[in-house]
Image 1: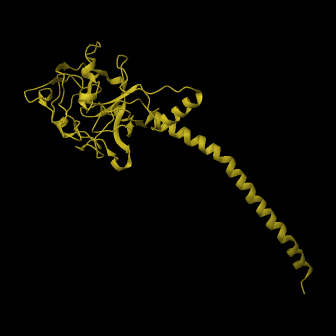
Image 2 (image 1 turned 90 degrees about the horizontal axis):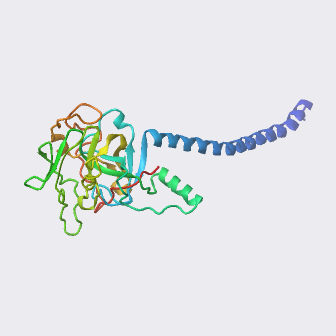
Image 3 (image 1 turned 60 degrees about the vertical axis):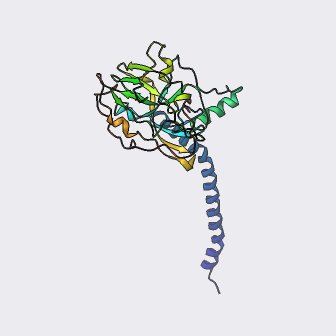
Amino acid sequence: MQSDAEDRDTERAPEAGENAAEREQGNGRSSWKEIPLLIVVAVLLAFVVKLFAVQAFYIPSGSMENTLHVGDRVLVNKIVYRTRAVRRGDVIVFRGPSSWTPEAKVAAPSNPFQRALRWLGGAAGVAPTETDFIKRVIGVGGDRVRCCDAQGRVTVNGTALDESSYLYEDPVTHVRNKPSEEAFDITVPSGRLWVMGDHRQNSADSRYHRTDGNGGTVPVKNVIGRAFFKVWPVGSAGPIGVPATFGRVASGRGAPPGGPAEPAAPDPVAADVPPLAGGPGRGGYFRAAV
C-alpha cells in the first residue's frame, strides 16, 4: 500500500518529463535559428581568408600547358611576397597592364541573378573571370633576358635555361615547344618582371607587349600572389614548383624588386617539381576568381 507521499511523487513525475521534452524542443528550435548566423560567419571568414591569405583561381585557357590545364583550379598565396621578393621561376597571378587584352573570353552575365552566381563561383574558384593572368617569372629587376642562344635557348644574365621540364609538349607528336619563336633582348627595369607562359606558342606574354611602353614587363605591384598548389582535378593535384634551372642563374646588374639580389634559393614548396600529371596541359591566362 503506497503512502500519500509516494502518491504525490508519482503524480509529479509526468509533469517533470513533459517539461524536459518541452526544453528539448525549445533547444532544437534555437539550433535552427542559429544556422543562418553560422552560415554568415563562415562566409565572412572565407572572404577574409580569400582577401588576405589564399585565393582559388580558375584556369580558362591554354597558355600554361602542360603545367596547368583548362579548367584546373589553383591556390594562390597572397602573403608570400610580403615576406620575400618575387623569384625567377615562380608561377604568379597578376593584374594585366591596361594594354594586355584577355587571352580567353568570358560571356558577361545578362541579369543580376547570373551576376550573383558568377560572383559566388569566382569566390570559390570554380568560374572564370577576365582581368588577371597567370605566367611564369623568367626575369626580375636587373636581369638581362635574351632569346635565343646558339642552341635556341632563353638566357638570363648569360645563363641558358633548361626548360625541358615544363615547356609544352604535343601529346600526339611529342614535339616540345621551342623556347620562343620570337627573338628578344631586354634588361628588366627595377620593380618590374619579364613573364612567359609555358606554352610558348599559345601565350600572349611579355614577348608580345614589347611596344607597350614598358618593354612587355609587368609591375611587381600588380602581382596578386604565387600559385603554389593545384587542387583540381583531384587526380593531378599537387604542388606547383620552381624548376632547378632557375637556381643556377646569377643575379643581374640590379636588385630584384622587393629585396636584395639573390640566387633563386628554394622556398618550402619550390622544389624541382616536374610538370603535373594529367595529359596535355592547358591553362595559363585566367581571370581572378574573386
